Image 1 (cartoon, rainbow, N blue to C red):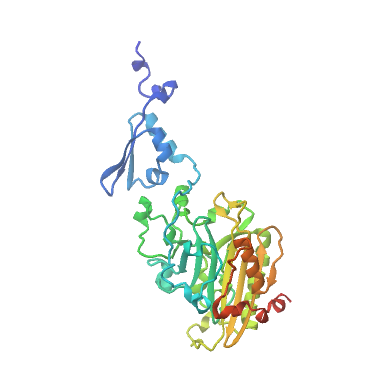
Image 2 (cartoon, one colour):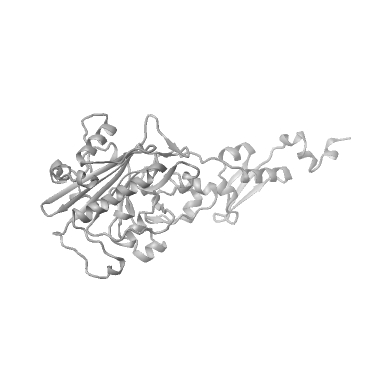
Length: 407
């Protein structure tokens, strides 16, 4: 008796002969009205197929398989399979807002910090709300709330900048962290359909499946990276010191302004942020307004004091320590603040090694600069200068108030 009569159709695919069947898979793009992949083998599908396209949006991308049930089951198995995020091979060439200079207004005399290697190659973010989002409709899409220099390879901020003449209260909004629209993979077919890349800006996360999360997190860290870890997702620039206005506090809730900090340091670092607020109020005469005062005429004169804040993180190297196998865990977290009030200047800095129960160090700005120079340049010629404007007045030891702050 012929096998073709005994083992057809389903029995053929339940036994040892199942692996001999040559299944073919094709993908139809309903928008383009054509097949974008044709006659892929099972091996090709598992090696090159993207689960987001093949599985999650079948009103747009319609998969086809060979007729036998075994082949259809294989396609469903492919869609159910858990996979790790595939690393992105291409380096992010886009440098964001670096050429637009909208970030420079947060720097003392618009002069950038010096001595940080390859800083011009990093992604510069003028933190604003993406057009078409709810927050942009409320607060506007054009106003830059603060600025960040971001490392897309390490998926973490290098530093964030802020300046303020007044502060709000220290209450924080309850929000999920937003994504940076400019760091979404624009060359990715599905996302180019769903995320129009007219402009950059912060947007609420709009992904659900693991595969979508993988694509969204190609260049930026995600809240999912912190699951079951000993690190908190912490603001680099805290909403407490972003300046007056609800929009500024909300804007700090973006993943490009976050980093992993050891859970044992979280409370102590928040106290360091409180010290910066206290410095602004007590030593720089920065007023605190309630939100009910927002319609009152606030201070605009250049004669009033201003505080410039730079917050940063030194990435771990040799060895690089990773969160969820993809997000660099910083070796050092730091902040520096400088008050300029007419001809008077005062400043201090804080830093901590990102390890269990490490002490928070309050120090002169110049001490932090020496430490950063050693960490970034291995004692080379390129000295770090955080506030190089006006001959480095903010780094002058005569203007240091760190001993008063730590008292």
